[in-house]
Each structure stands twice: as structure tokens, then as C-alpha cells.
Length: 353
Image 1 (cartoon, helix red, strand yellow):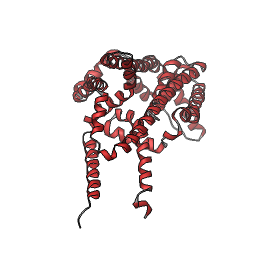
Image 2 (cartoon, one colour; image 1 turned 45 degrees about the vertical axis):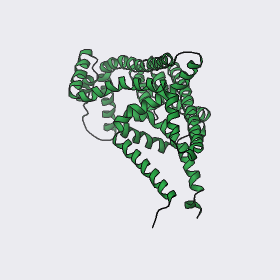
Image 3 (cartoon, one colour; image 1 turned 60 degrees about the horizontal axis):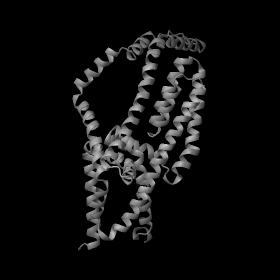
Image 4 (cartoon, one colour; image 1 turned 180 degrees about the vertical axis):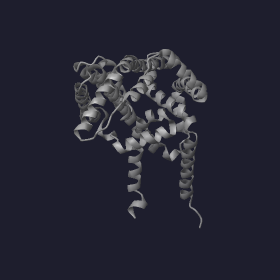
């Protein structure tokens, strides 16, 4: 039975999509720096375009945008280093005392239940003390040893650290030409529909990125102020880190919560730390989910938590940690494409017949 021209065209597009999906799966590690550079360039190109309208050369504008982004990332990294450098030495000193209190509480609980056992956490205390040792020479030796045993990984990380900014710079310099050239390859009869789809994707993604940035900044102020009012000495670095880390759902918030619990346990050594962290972080979650996210991001681009978890696992498996960062922007685009596919399906003969 001969195949119609329309069916041949559809089969060709399906084959091309399958080939693209296969290449994406096989070349995930290779495509990762290009995808990250494309995401960064998309986020920065409006600023570069605005500077170009101010008669600032594109090369200078792109360089300034990349430098400001690098400064922001270094500042975020310094917050983490500040928290760890102040917390780990305290933890090393107080681990034996904390474990002694824990052992005494467990012993009393077991005795109250009629269990006659001897609980000794001394070995665990020695292991934890060695693990959080604040000796800089020991850390340096460990890093060098890891670099020797995993030289390929180290070279990959360093290579991406150089490659991604270079790729982003080239994308920012030739953004208009690349977009126009790519759009010129689209079949003529599909250009208008594709342009509408791309405009909608651009609007959703732009609204998502702007809204997510505002949410991060507001939550950073909220957590820092809340922990500060609760009397935490590390309120600012932990609060700012938690607010900015919400860009990675569940993971960023979880790390910030653990840091706050650790800092509170070392500072107060009482249940007050647990209660204070529960109040501040519980209120932060309510504020984010009930007001900030619906108001600033909009319910139209809200992603179901199950879909968010799937995206994090899938992109993390394909592209590593960077894939986790790209998961939510990709999910916002998938939502737009899914709406168009559902509309096409409801108007197709497959659904109507």
C-alpha cells in the first residue's frame, strides 16, 4: 500500500525527532556545556541588547554581563565557605560533648523501656571529629590526592569552567544572526505557527526567570531576617544561601535547612534551635508556595511537584549537576509545548473519530 505524501512528511519529522533524542541521550555530557551556555546567553542577552541600544559595543556589553554573573557566583560560593569555615571548627570541638549528651539520653530512654544495654558513642565521635577536621593541610592533601586519582574529572571541570564562558560570549555576540539563521531553515508553511509557539515560550521563560530571581532575593532577605531575629550568629550567610538556593527545588532548601539546624545546634545546644528553625523555615515555605510563587511566577507556569522531581532526576542523570539547574527552565518550556500538543490532539482525527 503506497504511503501518502503527508504521511511521509510526518514519518520524516518523527524520524528526525527520534534521531535528535538519541543524540541527546548519547552525547549528554558533550552537550551539557552548550546547553548551559545557551541558557546563560538567553538570560543575559536582553541586558546586552539594551546596552547595545545605549551605543555600547556588543563585545563590551557581553563581557560586562559575564563579569557581573561571575561576581554573583563567587559571592554565593563565598557564603558557603563562610558558613563551613565557621561551623566546622565549632563542630569538631563540640562533637564529643553532643554525643555524650545523646548517649546519656539514649541510655536513660532504654532503661525506662526496660532494656539493659550499654551505649557507647565514643568511636562514632572519633570518626566524626576526624571527618570535620579543620586542618587546612589535611584538606589540601585530600584535594591533591583526589585530583591524582580522578584527573579526568578534574580536567573536565576545569575545561567546562573555561569553555562555558567562551561559548556564552560567542552566543551573545551573534545572538540575532544565529536566531535568524535557525528560523530561516523552518518550512515556510510552519513559520507562523512556530513563531507563535516561540513567542509564547519566550514569554513564559522570561516571566519564569524574572519571577524566580525576585522570589530568590525576597526569600534570601526573609530567611536572613528571620534567623537574625531568632539570634543566629550565622543568620546572614545561611539565610542568603537558602534564599538563593531555592532555584534548585528541594535540594537547595534542604541544604539550607541542614546548615541552619547545624549552626543552631552548635550555638544554642538546646531544643530552641530546632523550634526556631522550624518556625522560620516553615513560614518561608508557606510564604513561597502560597504567595510569592503564584503572584510572581503565575499559576500558568506552575509545575506539579511530581513532575519537578521527575525533571530533577532525568536531567541530573543526563547532564549531571548542571542538568539539575536546567531542569525547571526546561520544564517551563515543556509545559508550553505540552499545551500546544494537547490542543493539536483534541482537534485531530485521532481524537474526534
